[in-house]
Amino acid sequence: MNRSRQKFLQLQFRATAISVICAAVLLVAGCNYLLPASYIIEGPPKAPAAFELPSKRTVVIVDDKINRMPRVALRVGIGDSVGTHLLENDVVPETITTRDAVALIRRMDTASKPISIQRICESLGAEQVVYVEIDEFNLSGGREEGGPEAVALVKVLDIANGSRLWPTAGSEAVQSFLQDINPSLITTSAGRREVEDKLAEKLGEDIAKLFYAHERRELGGRLGVKK
Image 1 (cartoon, rainbow, N blue to C red):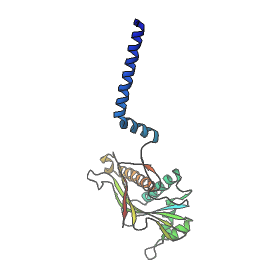
Image 2 (image 1 turned 120 degrees about the vertical axis):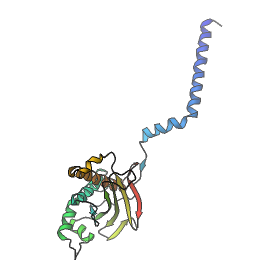
Image 3 (image 1 turned 30 degrees about the vertical axis):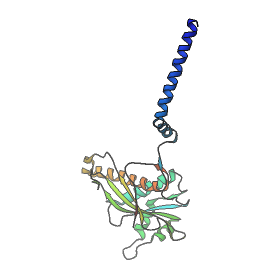
C-alpha cells in the first residue's frame, strides 16, 4: 500500500469515527434539540378560548355595582379594550362602544326603576352582550408582593333569545396584574390616573382572551367560575 493510499484511508476512518460520535451525542440529547426546534417552528404554546362567541353584533357592558373604580371612564376603558381585542382577533364582526352603553344607562337608569340588560341591548341594537361585573380594582394590590390588581366576573348573554350562553351558571372570574409599576406613581393624582387606565386596559385584554386562543402568560388570566 503506497503512502497516499494509506493517508486517504486514515482520513476516511477519522471522518467516519467523528460521524458516529456526533450521531451518538444527538441520539442521547435528542429531546434537548427537538423541543427548541418545535418551539421555533410552531411558536410558544397557546391557551385555547374558554368560549367561542357567536358571530353577532356585540356590546360589552361593564357594571361596577360596589363602586370599586373611582371613575366612570374606567368602565368605558375596560369595555372598549375588550371590544378592540375581539375585533382585532376576528372574534365578532361588529361591536358597539361601551361609551354608548354607559351613556344610555346614565340617562335611563333610576334607583326606583333600574334599566334591564335586555332593554339596554335592544336600544343599542346589540344581539349579544359580554357582561362584566367589577369585583376588585385595587392599585395597592391584593397579592403578597402588592401591585395593581383587578378582578372581573364575566358572562355572555344572548339578547334575541333572552338566554345565558356562558357559563351555564355563575360567572367566569378573570384576574389581571400590572408589573413593574413604580410605587411613587400612585402618590400623585396624575400618576394614579395613569396606572388606573393601564389596569383597565389590561383587564379588558384579559377578558377578551377568554374568547380566542392566545399565548399563555405567567400573571393574570382565568380564575374559574364564581357561583
